[in-house]
Each structure stands twice: as C-alpha cells, then as structure tokens.
Length: 194
Image 1 (cartoon, rainbow, N blue to C red):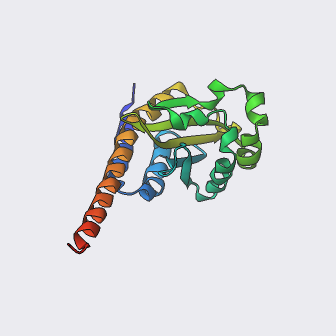
Image 2: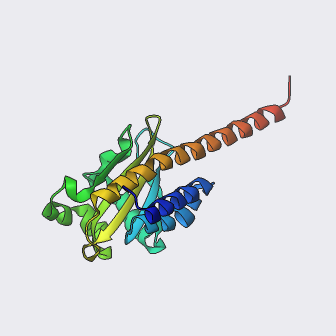
Image 3: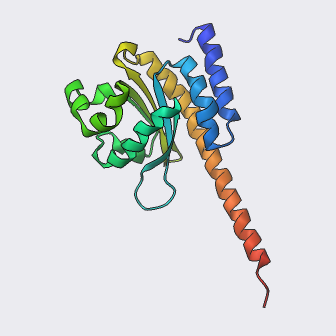
C-alpha cells in the first residue's frame, strides 16, 4: 500500500509524464522525477527503431547524460543480450535482471563487461514499453551494489507507472503518424493536376 507521501510523489510523476510532448521531454523531465519515486543510480529510456523488419532499440535518453555512453555501447552488443527479448514482447513486461540470471553469469557477460562495468552497475529493472501489442521501447533503471537491490514494492511502482508510460508513448507515436499524413497530403495537394 502506498503511504500518503509516496502517493503524492506517484501522482506528481504521472503528471510530469503526461506533460511530456516529445521523446526528449521524457529524458529531461520524466526520468529525473521518477528518481523521487524509485531511487536509481542511472536510468535510460530507448525507443524502438522505426525502420527495418527487426526490432532494435535506439536513441537513448539517460540520467545522468554521461550514462548514454553505456547505452550506445549496449546498442553495439545488443545481439549478445540475454534480455533482448524484452524489446520484442507484445505485452508490457517488467523484470529485475538479478531474478533472471545468476550474479556470476550476469557479471561475466559481454554486455556487462563492455557496457555497464565502467559504471559499476550491479542490477537493473527493465520495463518493456508496449501499447496495443506494439513494442515501443524500454525503460531501464540501474543500481550499483552499494545502492542495494530493487524491492518488490519498487517493481510494483514501476509497473504502475509503466501502464501510463505505454499510453504516453502510444500517444506520441500517433501524433507522429498524423504529422506524416499531413505532410503527404500537402505534397499531394501541391502536385499539378492533369
């Protein structure tokens, strides 16, 4: 159950989320606010690439911004990621990475060694953003060993925020689609007749 103060923070996080009009706004406003509800060391949100038949994540927005280097490295090694299935799910999915893979395997993986070890990441929460069966991206929260593990309550909070994030991302996608239709309609209207 949410305490009164946590409930107020939860509402403030959602309010900030729905104020986001662009993808960049999620990194500038939403991610920092989310830290008040679910403390993290690093966070990133990445969206699904719009082109191509395969599903892959692009355009990392990170808190702090320097963490984008880890996510850019991740994109180079994504084919080796044992959690890559998250970006292909047709339902919103949430997991604590330490629940999926043992510590030794996780810390010895190529992804960890090449991407996250320089930032001393120890564990993560991963949320697959999906709306109407369409994968839209992923939200990741990271902690170092000294930060402690993410709790079951924090998983609950992220799942609750995630349902709203799914809708917000779908709304932005619809707005982009409408804009493309307008541009095409203007181009067609500008063509000479006859």
